[in-house]
Amino acid sequence: MRHVIAIDQGTTGSTVLVLDEKLQLRGRGYKEFRQIYPQPGWVEHDPEDIWLSVTFALQAALAGIDPASIAAIGITNQRETSVLWDRATGKAVHNAIVWQDRRTADRCAELKHAGKEARVKQLTGLTLDPYFSGTKVSWMLRNVDGLAARARAGEIAFGTVDSYLLSRLTARAVHATDVTNASRTLLFDIHTLAWSDELCEVIGVPRVMLPDVVASSGIVGTTKGVPGLPDGIPIAGLAGDQQSALFGQACFTPGDAKCTYGTGAFILMNTGDKPVVSNAGLLTTVAWKLSPEQGGELRYALEGSAFIAGAAVQWLRDGLQFFSSATEIEALAGSVADSGGVIVVPAFAGLGAPHWRPEARGSITGLTRGTTRAHIARATLEGIALQNVDILRAMERDAGRPLRTLKVDGGASANDLLMQFQSDVLGVEISRPDVVETTALGAAFLAGLGTGVWKDQDQVTRTWREQRRFKPIADRTRVNEHLARWDAAVAKA
Image 1 (spheres, rainbow, N blue to C red):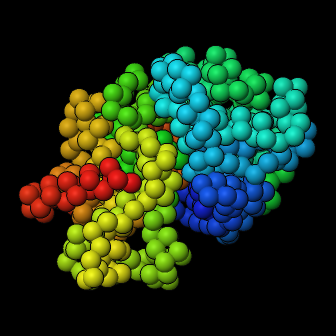
Image 2 (spheres, rainbow, N blue to C red; image 1 turned 180 degrees about the horizontal axis):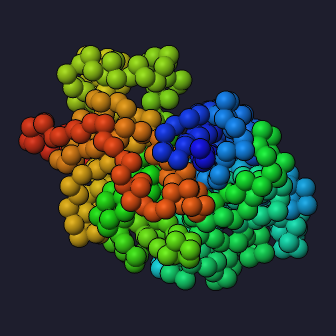
Image 3 (cartoon, rainbow, N blue to C red; image 1 turned 120 degrees about the vertical axis):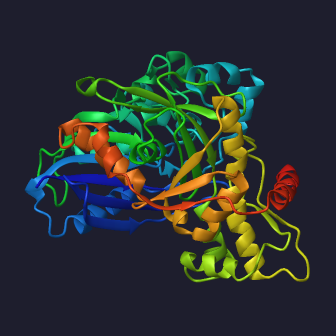
């Protein structure tokens, strides 16, 4: 029996799954790591912490598994988080700057003022926002003594987390990323599927720093010197976490859409083999590209991201100490019939699509003397869902088609109260799969397809199973009143 490893390197921790040829889960490991907040609005990770969390999770997942049975490894990752390392030693030269980090907001504003945004969006499908990798890299080059000169000399490598892990897994033999991660950097032309010298000059990143760009599925390197793993295992799947979840949810038909509820909430819709330009503040991104041996299928997606979702629940737990475990929020929120007019806008890291207001901040409105912890907890869950309404309505306009069903995954998708409210405010059915760790599943599928463990996408489709479906049940008039209160609160955030 062959096994496939999926490494899911997330914002707050690393998960490793081991799947057999029948797509049954045979092993699982998880390890959290530090979050570093040097200043308000700044978020960093120590790359060594990331690597140690991956090796810890690997060893936990492989307990009882014959290492010789591992046929392939797939990697999926927090996407825009940016790492710079010394090519000779592999040692990071600065903490990773995390996708949530807002320190480059002023630089993005300068580029917009200089009239660069339209051209950047034309080439990349992205907006000029500190969310993306490019301005994070240029910030490090400008703020670490001597780094810019070393980068121009070819001594420094840049990569998103997939690229950094690939380098570590192969003992620095491979410096590469896939098309999905490349498409999140502000440096990649999504039409030609190549790095753009023009964009590198605009953003201020030397071309020599950038990794090779490969397909999302297909062998890109083999393991060497990894604790607990034999050398020579093919690494054959790479994809940013949200594209990986789209693949893992079997969203193979144009119009299929999914929402991943993790630290943030991320909605992607498959738009087929041509990029769809958004007129509503959404992103156009590469969904995946298969290897030439698999036919070279290329898919694009529309994407809308809410920067804060599960992180809002963590804030209630850690910052306000409403409960000791995040899973307790459902019972607390369910202890009241509604949120009592309270609206929570969880814009703790600015507002993402379709608003793109990095200066926005979180707010709680509608408080009265009768407001309790339960009302605020419920309003926080509702705020997570209401952000998605703004995104999906914009997506429907851009795609020119109504959404009929939304597939969901990620930790917070297990919250029935949240899923029912999401269905009510969207007015569409919500489909939750048996396995909600579809981000990791997508990486496993891509790696297995890239090594012949599974022959085609039909096997993925046949494996995907629905666990529960939520249908709209709320009174539409009350829903519309709630949406109006939300719109008013967002305008003030």
